[in-house]
Length: 308
Ligand code: A3P
Image (tube, rainbow, N blue to C red; front, side, top):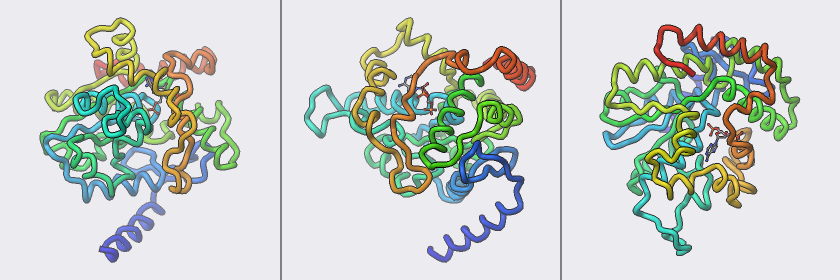
């Protein structure tokens, strides 16, 4: 097995050295363009390993998203829904919902990085797995098995601003010079962002959803927010537990750490819980920048029937 792994590492390194290289918004790892999308080596390697190894089960639910579109919220809502009869409100440790002492990213394994834990949640009867992989990168077993896919997307203007904040905080935590907003904006518009081009990521899932309507649930962050504000048929207890207000005030999300001991990937949980606002882009983008992003969005989505 070790031999196979060494072989995989070697051919991965060779392959990556042939790919176009892009600025990773000030982070030390570069982005590489593989089959149309920009990823850093650990994530690309993780997807490729999953393509070889991951066997989806028909009962699995795969949570898919581009970074910064509401991934943590989707994880907490689905986890809380699936486990709704397993935990109660008591403080008895075994019955205490894991979401109250683990951050949402730590209750759902991540396809690209958590190979060792793929089966752990399944054994617990929680068939959830998350990925930022574009649709065209998904292991074939996800497409071929009867498993379900939930995709979440968000206004590109907010997604960009949230990405910019996350990566400047990452850069600071790694003592590297954070990127300027204007430079990050240019890169995002050109599609050079984590798992970008963002629009192609969304369109990949949108088009696949039209092909396999029974397999997909396609969500927009803004619509979910509206449904919750208007309390349109939402299970109140779950929504309350997973609300930004509740989760961001939990000790684990204020002072805990995510992926500690995993090199560059380690980060404080609180940077995933900053504002939870819709249209916060208005505080960061000039009208000119907003118009430019809107134009790209219109152009890219023009014939798709999707609006963002
Ligand atoms: P901020 O923390 O910067 O405000 P992702 O999980 O894909 O990285 O997306 C993170 C963003 O989703 C957060 O960015 C916030 O806007 C929103 N978010 C996170 N947790 C949420 C929750 N429980 N409810 C609603 N929105 C949430």
